[in-house]
Image (cartoon, rainbow, N blue to C red; front, side, top):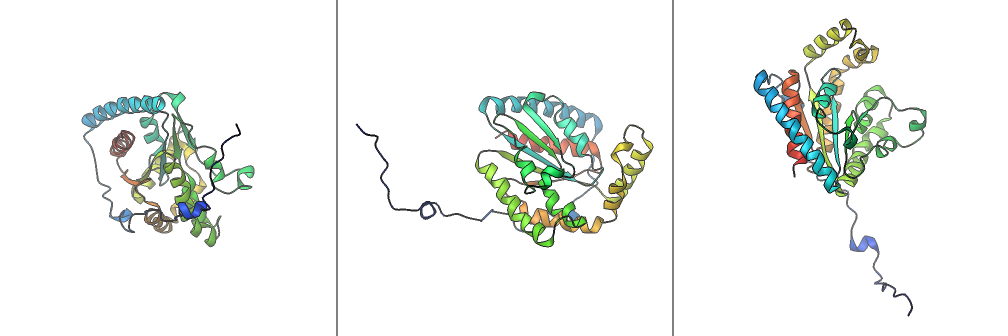
Length: 263
């Protein structure tokens, strides 16, 4: 008996499932960067105890994601010296290194510049059962590349739709995604810059680029707010984190990560 073939209904795919560019972005102003209270603090002993409890919970969730073959992406953006690295360190403290990967993102290399800017991020998305953590991310297109002129106006303006499409492609495929922005004020940043310069272990973290970026504070405020207004979505939300006190920032990130992954 010959192989049975599926009857052609005459319908095009686009007739059955219309393509949509509705990314369900929250209304502009839902997140207000300049209105964020940066004076949030915590009691040291209680905070450290809760952090330990949350780290244990995160390990349990990591195991669950492995067993259920689920994926998660955690994105970290924020000012220079806002504490992204230290926060990620506490986040992964008890996690099994075989089940997660931290991607520190710097300027693209020659090969990466030969491709679309999302190419190097697409190749770093997590396999099933694992978690990917991005220390800076594809948002560079609408942040540093916009401010420094590495992308044309046309390129960074279309970047919002490209980013929304890129993220939703992965969330539609079952990836859990949350994006953190660590916010500090200028005085706190200056204090941390000076401390880094004096610390022989940390002075590699401070350079001319950091001081130059600081001069564009207002421009970055505008670019960050635009990014929130254009890409804060239910499936891949932004979480603004007051980070003047590092302990509060770490606790906030841990709490939200547990909440997002424990679904």
